Image (cartoon, rainbow, N blue to C red):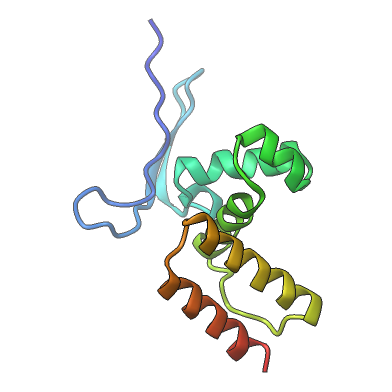
Length: 134
């Protein structure tokens, strides 16, 4: 019977700090490599974010296709994409073009009307757009 395989944890279950890999082993021949290895940013994502990224790649970034694939709405796809961007550490705001800022405002207001964010969160996000766009 083969040994069950589990996804690699990226954070400590006790304190939440990042874990690092110290041992790699070949399942076929038993070769072992020991040292200190880092996990890349993608390997540190939670399973649901990895599944989302797989859908993104499978659908070549076409959000309409992702809606069908994942069974979620356009604003939810956009919100989850924002979450993954933040998890990867790319959350620093750059100055948005006017069309991008309009799209972001529309998405925030849709999330508010769908109840996926509170009025307070929407206000903070809208304020952040104003600050980032100046």
